[in-house]
Length: 301
Image (tube, rainbow, N blue to C red; front, side, top):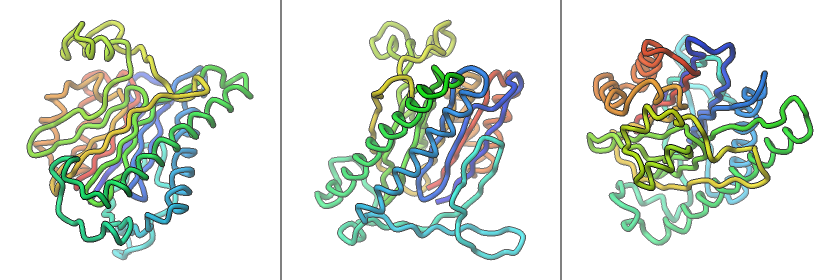
């Protein structure tokens, strides 16, 4: 697995309110909102609290083994991956991660799965635990952001989107709140895996508007589900079977508000490598206007 991440402030914003994490086979993007620096605080706190809780729970269940390396380009040697590969300051990562195992009960399941129905029962038990941890992590993250906003008047009303995935043994476990997105190019077809938690997203799902109309609708930026605004948060939990050659793109809405899905697909098809895909997606979004911060993580399986 190879991946590359980058965050860009765009052409019109005074600060970058996006935040991301890459490491331990866990990938997250978040897009904060709120006055002054509140949005930047919300996304950072949400991601960091999510990651800390998730990794603690994984280790507690003893179903995950950290074994990630990265290559130091200057010394041409392999070193341990730094603990914190996150940020919003255009930090770039081009890391090759080793295979990570869950339990010995699933180590023999090396062939890709075509659908959920093809999972063996032993795998489903373990992976259901992963999904449970993802859900607990998002609830914990929501509580941390909400509590901070309640205690500090300058952070009142802050919130954030959060879209993340944990990849292991040929499956991506996905957790999603808000309108950041996860696309997967699978067998030459680009699929939007997440659903936008927005007013127009709900209108589309109810058959009131077409998918194309979502892109230009005047209410397209109105969120109806945000992390940190209330004591509870609703999240989507998805699992997706992966095969070699699949490409995942996590992004904040600075990308898909500027580029349509067919434009995103064209860039993925043209450049193929995570670094070039990420850089070209952000560059193209900025050329189209760059109205918002844009964060992209591209993962090649």
